[in-house]
Image (cartoon, rainbow, N blue to C red; front, side, top):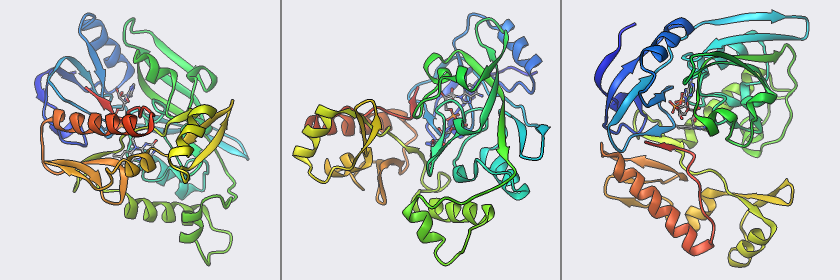
Length: 332
Ligand SMILES: Cc1cc2nc3c(=O)[nH]c(=O)nc-3n(C[C@H](O)[C@H](O)[C@H](O)COP(=O)(O)OP(=O)(O)OC[C@H]3O[C@@H](n4cnc5c(N)ncnc54)[C@H](O)[C@@H]3O)c2cc1C
């Protein structure tokens, strides 16, 4: 496998910020990955998926590992379900499309999320009441420090809201993920915009649900190829009862919902909008006019411009509402 030097990372992050990586490699299988880890034990390492959830503010003085495992295989099947193993570099929506076309259900609500399969467990991608964790049975990975091959059961992944063991430790390169998908499908009406999109369709099929979600997402979110962005920039904050009450004193219409343990989730987009930042633009960076949570790049190649704008929003929301927004996007 070729190890490349001084690689420009602009095309490897959806914000399109410029930075140079000292070393860069694309291992195609576990053996190549182990070899490269053994060859560079002391280099700082960063695993790169499709680059939809990170950007660079400076050069990367270390080794970028971009897994290249591309296979999709059915590894177990019975009359009720299939288990599908997909390589880390498989494009997420290609996998979803293939599964939906075969009638395998479980990930259709995650249609059109820009991701590689390998990154899907990292923040436990989610949309329309479904998360990657609902179907993941096994994550195969290599320990970046020891080169050891590891397999993690669903429980061992310690999934949470936009969270996992992998995200917290940054210690592993995921090489493939095994999903268990059902051979039957029952549409559950849960989301207003999805129901609206499917109005008039009696008992929607899995393909109709996927198509509806693709349409909604295409309308709602900016295309990264046209308006560079990384999706939702901040996580929805989870509040204590006291924080929730204090917020609703300031903003009576603040949406909150109970997530158990006396904790309440609220909407980061709502807070950003109330802080006066929806559609606001500073120079080459702004928030998307249709979605306050999405920061968009109007033409800078300097990641610091994006980070500064994000910190400004964070500071303003903290000042006005006493709530600290936590970035969902990785800033390097
Ligand atoms: C327009 C838009 C809409 C979005 N909508 C959603 C949404 O609805 N729901 C949602 O959950 N997310 C959403 N996101 C965020 C994004 O889709 C996810 O974070 C996705 O998983 C990123 O995948 P990636 O391959 O681009 O990862 P990258 O951005 O390349 O990497 C993200 C993180 O994962 C790590 N990583 C990547 N691959 C591996 C691997 N093989 N092994 C170990 N670590 C790895 C990286 O080191 C980094 O820390 C959206 C993003 C965009 C741009």
